[in-house]
Length: 205
Image (cartoon, rainbow, N blue to C red):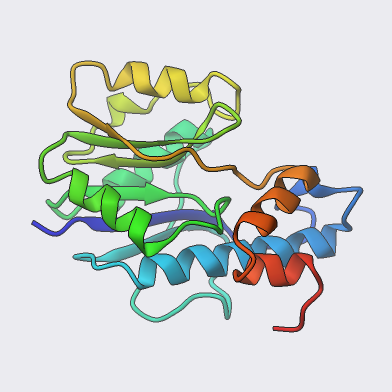
């Protein structure tokens, strides 16, 4: 059974996204970098075989959205609620893999590895180098696996994995989330051909 892919993201509006990139970058510049990261992520998802592709979006779609995505509004207050609702809203009876917009270095190969893992695992987990996670795949989503997990902390990944105890979990390579200017520089160096790297380095699109 082919898995579905799900992206959870914010509309890249100045002052509302990538605020930790300021003051090194202006809010407008931070939003440009967020838009580039989101475009890279969506392009990787679009290039990965999937049963369906969904974007759970806080805000409105923009020119960065490619064809082939169903757009659903995010629901909930905290990130744990928004993740749980996104899984619930996008679930169509097939395994479901969720990624955020903070890892523009993600590739179709990595996403394909995640979807393939759900053929014989209950979950797949992509740890982030800051202690969080950049990907979570579930063969059968269950809100109880996410609700109440403290998010945006250095122990978020460990706590999320603890919720998956008893399930067969496959693990992917760790990736760096783009949160700080140092993160942005690291990711751009690691993935120099991305839209994100071009935007950070001032290369015209």
